[in-house]
Amino acid sequence: MIGFIFSRQSDETLMLRAARGSERAFEELYSRYSLRLKGFFCRQNSCRHLADDLTQDVFLRAYAARHTWREGKKVEPWLFSIAYNLCRNTWRHQQIEAGFRSNVTTDEYAMPSVEVDLDRDALDSALHEVLESLDDENRLLFSLRYEEEQTVPQIAVIIGIPEGTVKSRLHKLINIIKHQLKRYENR
Image (cartoon, rainbow, N blue to C red; front, side):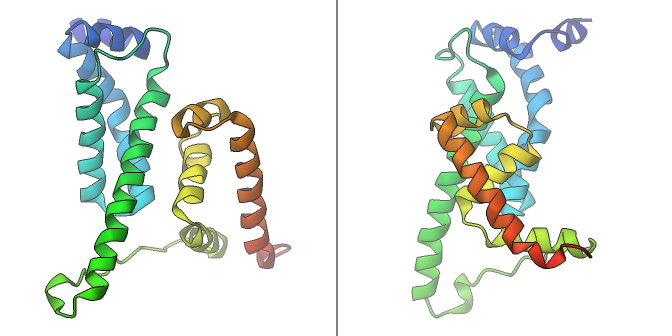
């Protein structure tokens, strides 16, 4: 019965309860967002184990910061802000690692290549290739808007930039994708 009561409360109410010490309220938030965040990380990284770790990191950080969460602030963009920052930190770490690996000549540090299943029709495959060719920031922006279905104001909060900048970046991103997929027009 208690689980039912928590499942009917808003995210913000649950976060207030969690900030006051209710572990059950925080567990409910975890159950609402863990799969979405894991999917978000998988699309950014395509490594399921890293996505699991990053999802746990989001909730560990959210739990640690639950007392600093302010009433009136939306929970979903807050969690995705934490996820966004973890992605950026992971990219930085991977770049440093890649630089290190390029200087090491032994096979001891060689990473196995990850095979990606592209069992989709031609347009889906092409879109996937275009998304893969984007820089990390544009791929993340695409994911937030079109896969996570975040609104422009939510993305602005998550990334920490003005809404107008989000709109401008989305417009440029869509033009890049259209240009790259132009060869599939009228097929």
